[in-house]
Image 1 (tube, rainbow, N blue to C red):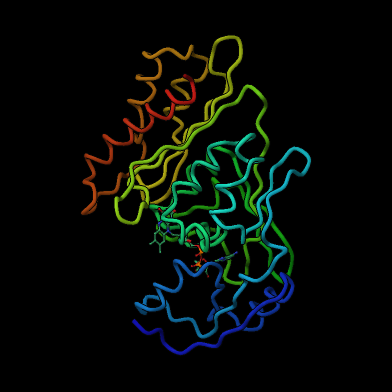
Image 2 (tube, protein in one colour):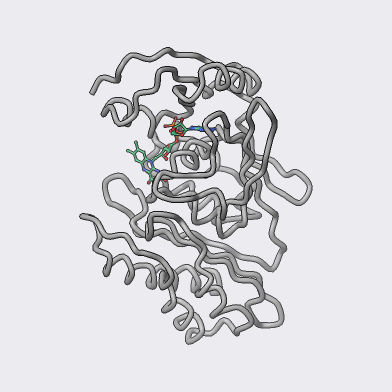
Amino acid sequence: MIPSEFEYCRAGSVEEALDLLAQKGPDAKILAGGHSLLPAMKLRLNSPGAVIDISGIGELSYIKEEGSHLVIGACTTHGDIAKSTLLSEKIPMIVEAAAEIGDVQVRNKGTIGGSLAHADPAADWPASLLAGEAEIVLASSSGERTVAAVDFFQGLFTTDLGENELITEIRLPIPDAYTKSTYVKFEQPASRFAIVGCAASITRSNGSCDKVRVAFTGVSSTPFRDQAVEQALEGQAPSDDNIEAAAEKAAMSVEVMGDHFASQEYRKHLAKVYARRALQAVLS
Ligand SMILES: Cc1cc2nc3c(=O)[nH]c(=O)nc-3n(C[C@H](O)[C@H](O)[C@H](O)COP(=O)(O)OP(=O)(O)OC[C@H]3O[C@@H](n4cnc5c(N)ncnc54)[C@H](O)[C@@H]3O)c2cc1C
């Protein structure tokens, strides 16, 4: 349980963190809340030569409105997001996802950027960020780029993040007043990681569901938007029958995971149940 030897570097600014990443090369690892990296280092699943601590960079911790978007700094903790009245008013599923993560210690230290970079298939964030059509801002010493969440997650613990890149910000378009959203999950009882997590965001007009976004985490090795569910409900009235028919299509297009917490068959069943619960909650 003791990590191998590493050099510890503390970055005081984004610029300094990017310089350190460029200097130290692929052997360096960013340290944010440490709730995923440190256990991996102690188990020697990860043995970086250098650790660049970004937890003290104040400019990476914020939640604010910027034009048509709500933006969240990468080092904002799950706990601060769970307490945000701005997010709660505009995009409730984001606050609900944050409040569901781990326990109070995990929420007080763990960061949204760290969770996204780690890309645990059972992490909570991906579902609501996919359903919210979020973008992720990545910076390196050679510039900045923005990636849609749907392109960011690429597989089990795999993302589009380059070795010399830092996640700096998460950007969410502010939905109109006719949009409601929620995040619901079936959790692993000890850690509270998602066995199945489902986020739904629905815009209604004239008695029908105009725009439907449904996304899952925990179900497959890569979090995903479930277009079969979305399309089944789009343009339809929000009736119980239509909700049921849409939820029945959940997780049909992906390879569903099976493990000692939930078999493939049970997870597939849970995906339908949690899709139905999310849709009912949003449309009730
Ligand atoms: C007991 C326990 C219970 C938990 N329960 C849940 C749960 O219910 N749901 C859930 O979703 N998660 C859960 N987690 C995980 C937790 O949310 C972590 O906080 C999160 O996965 C990692 O965030 P961190 O800030 O601690 O990142 P760190 O551990 O510091 O880093 C994780 C990885 O991300 C990289 N990284 C960190 N920040 C950045 C950045 N800005 N740019 C680029 N790379 C970066 C690091 O190099 C490392 O590879 C749990 C963890 C524990 C220990």
